[in-house]
Image (cartoon, rainbow, N blue to C red):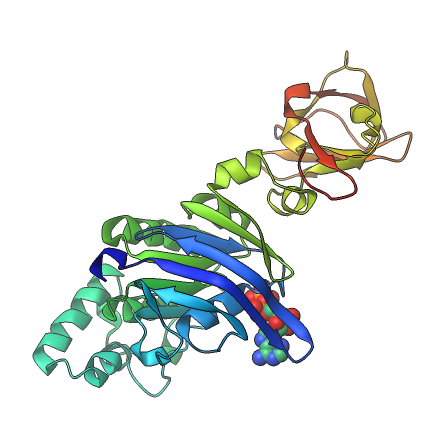
Length: 337
Ligand SMILES: Nc1ncnc2c1ncn2[C@@H]1O[C@H](COP(=O)(O)OP(=O)(O)OP(=O)(O)O)[C@@H](O)[C@H]1O
């Protein structure tokens, strides 16, 4: 089914490890050419989703479709997927060239053709001068590029990326993220990318999938999920610092049965505003500052301001709340109203 190439469909996927339910009925369709970011707390089942797609584990119930085909009986090496892990998983006894050629040799690609493809992938990822090095002679960033180049050589229908940037330092992470995005724009290969990183979740995917407790909580374009979180869990998970959530509404405006939420950037210092709080701490982050405040009723509100807010701990300050920016959730169910 060539028209389904690159399409991934997960249907009621359930998986338990002993008494731990890792996935609890996951449905998801990833479109051809799409880049989807999978986020969620530790243990929410993100890696399990990838492992089931790759065939490294089998679901207890449910189905995985790759390229329009139910892959239940297809072994991992026959699936059209390439997985990249945080810890690279390179062969330590092989050079970069050896690592890149390995999969091509398994697939009986002729040597001259394999060499040509390996060099092209290495050049694309900027590691062509490292072909004779062994993995332990390279930095983490370089190893990760080798792992990505190796995935590229498989020419899969789908890339499964399990936190590939997590062990890189901030500048390298930023640069590699940009490379990953450029590569995706060029190749348009369907990609599912697991990350813990808020910025990656917001910037890398066409859509973000929020997972919690083995269930999909919300799927949508990152900005939409950020602007309209489906429940209090998603509201508190996406965004750093997280959304302020006030059960009963309190000083955001009383609302029995509702939990009101406001993001730190939607609160502002304003001497004429009615909400008065005590400033407990100021976190200066260079490009911005985060104010930790506490109202007389005990409610804590986090405020995001410019880098030099001009106020200090212990001061009484007033906060302006943009009413159009207040989110309303049902306290009992947590669902957006
Ligand atoms: N092989 C295994 N044996 C037992 N339990 C497992 C196994 N693999 C995963 N689990 C459990 O299944 C749940 C989901 O794990 P999974 O690795 O998918 O989570 P995750 O969202 O990727 O977490 P993290 O962000 O920490 O990597 C966790 O509770 C985990 O402890």
